[in-house]
Image (tube, rainbow, N blue to C red; front, side, top):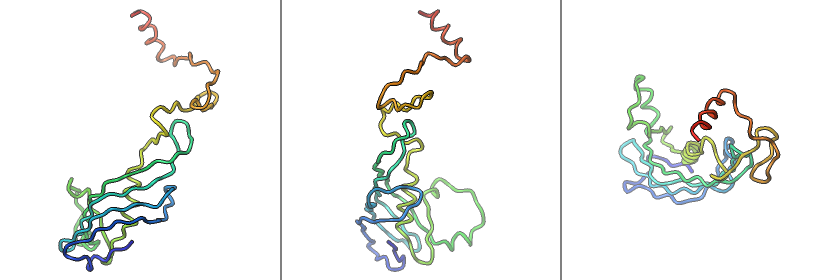
Length: 169
């Protein structure tokens, strides 16, 4: 959805909708739910609310695909891109980290949704906290079956620690 900044009323906008957005980086399972409050003060646009969507991910332990619901709070200030051209390079302050930019009097909520979903995907997604992963020797999914590989092999660099444990007992 595209919002024309100059047409935002003084009392603001309330947006509640479901959107199908194209996204190459993430496999979206369902439409994105947007619940946003849009306010304007001069040329700044304030977005506050939440974005929710179901995405298909791959578990970092067992490599199985699973669906995860990502819900992200949104609290961002948008300014016109013309401000960037007028300013010289400077270091970002903490209050500027939640700042975005819009072009030509148009703010695209699809871009906001994509950005927020991408930022909230876990670095190492897990299908469940109890996921056992795969055997590093034979590749068996340990969630589905047990393998017969010997686990007693100890990294030679850590063998000294095992001796310390024996002495302690």
